[in-house]
Amino acid sequence: MYPLFSRTSTKMAEALTRWQEGLNRIQSAPFHLFTVDNNSDVGVPSAVGAELYAPSYWGFINSIFLPTVVFYTMLWFAVYACVQYNCWLSWQEGIKRKRLLNLTTSLIHSTISGLYLFAFFCYNTKLMFAAPLHYYSYLDSQIIILSIGYFFYDGIDLVLNDKLSISTGVLLFHHVASIYVLSTAVLSKKFLLYAYWAMLMEVSSIFLHTRSILHISKLSTTSMIGFSKVISYLNLFSFIIFRGFVQFFLFGWAWVNYDHIHFVYKCIAFGGGFCFAVINVSLLLRILHSDGFLLSSVVSQDRLDALLEDNEYSNSSESVAKSEKKELLDV
Image 1 (cartoon, rainbow, N blue to C red):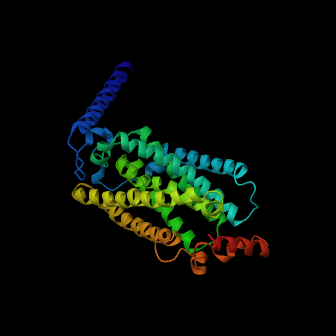
Image 2: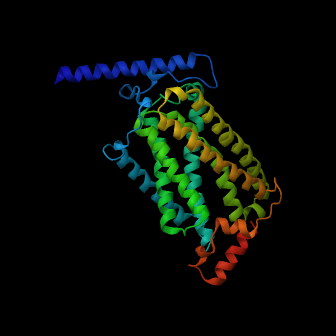
Image 3: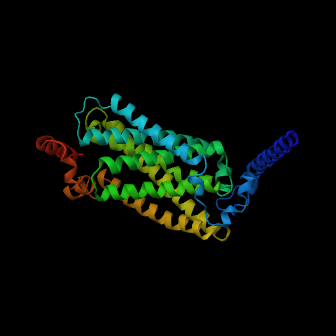
């Protein structure tokens, strides 16, 4: 028993030494925007070569991954409950308060994940560019699993509490795709920093959610007019950097490493990337239109109905529903 324990400890120490040496080598190497990722020494030894085979998802149910996802999902339900009992208490129950509560919860997720990932990027810039494929650390994977739990929470909330609409369908597609892509990175113990790159878009979401909260709560036209204008410009700037440039890098990196990953990963990189690019372009056009940078800043009746179907107001009295809908039209 003791010799076995000693051999295991020795192997772990050797792997940790190689991992640290690999990190030091990357930090001292010249910077390249796009490069083939051959840095397998900063990954998990048991996962060497896994990128050349189709991913296996059995780990979703026969490892600690599923209990961890369930834990984080329940944690986000608890966060929503705290928000519900402590925020927007002066607002009567209805579609506007529900949206404010959901946006506040989303803002909490974006702030936690976005700031963590941005700090990681600033501290490990060369690593982010050099090893999107091979780098893996169990602790560093937790922020990704936390986000998977958030997408599960929000998806469940959409299915249970929202009526079927175009916007609901698009959001559900986004969440399912995000869960699939992020789970693939964690279960394969590959592409962790690729997932980090994708989740850097949450930095943009911080300003996007803040902007939406200010508009829906009418703070953008009352006590926080100046702050709202600043957020509007920061939202546009962060959108270009953390969505536009990030997608450009993800496409470019996948193209450079095209011959070094399995077909499934190619489909995820290019097919999934294309879908998210379409969503981001559509979102950018909506922001430019709504904030007056493109055409008119007036929200049309058709645009509102695409976002909030009339039947979502069926649980409220007719007078309250009409009042809330009129206020949303003024946003």
